[in-house]
Image (cartoon, rainbow, N blue to C red; front, top):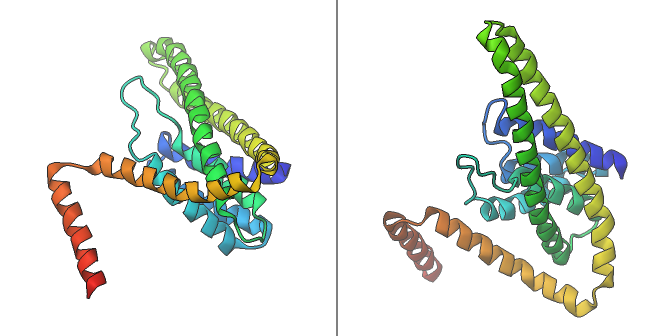
Length: 235
């Protein structure tokens, strides 16, 4: 389990650098990071395709769930990347070469949403640490010692990698340890309800996505697409 958690958490912390420190190419978005981590962890399980399938399934759900969050000014939203990484790792581990159960995806998604808010708290901590580094660098900048900035940038990236890796590893191990115990304590009726709740979660995600993009113009296009799909179905 430890190797599994470390692999998933290291992959997350490296990919998460894309969100702020490296290229910002959107590979840290849930749909992409879940697919990448699912493929890597699927390799550990001996089935890359199955891991990738779990990753893209989790990624699609969480992409729509977190699509409406944004960082404005000093506000720090939930961390969608760690939410996707932890959920994918937990579900992949608990579904080793077995047919995945819908209630496992539902419970994993709920756990992943909680992980996203834990990641948001950590992001605020990292911002505070970076603010201290900026204040530390100001005297050197005023004296023209600009080479210090590169060293402090590397220090900030290193701190971010360590903290994010440790946090994600703890969340993965916590999910792997807690979810089976919780699910085993539920009667079959609750597990059946969790299967149906997956569709409810999908409807919630669709509602969030529609709200994020809905304007007067997009209402027309949205209605046109739905009408076209209905027309094709009738034909």
